[in-house]
Length: 194
Image (tube, rainbow, N blue to C red):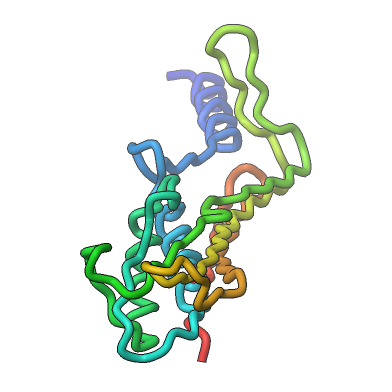
């Protein structure tokens, strides 16, 4: 092979390496494990902060009929665990309860913000998307949970307790530099209150 052919092949290989990029697919389901863990952590944190002052000895039924949304079943279970840890006796039979605890879900989702120094991904008409060409980019995912609850006497309907709204947060950040290097902070899972 002539010397020029080797030089051209080396330049093409060098150009290909210089323009290469890495894209990591985190999950094939519609939601990533990171998103699910962030939401679960925020839900656990908010549930642990939800406090109801009920007299001892009363059996309570947790009414989840208006507690709806993605991950609501997990969040409702976390709230029940928190109530049990507070010494509240729970029953699965509404007719057997002295007290009804109604729980509300104000928020349980993830906010995402992205900063790009350069050209963000561009979607052209059709199905073609040009990749991001940035010097630096960062993405922040922040899970937010807000729960509240009140309790009333099953027979009289009189309110016996109300909880202040409880919030839980959990977040993580990822970064990319020169479209070649990427790194991520460990998810900041919220700790239980002392």
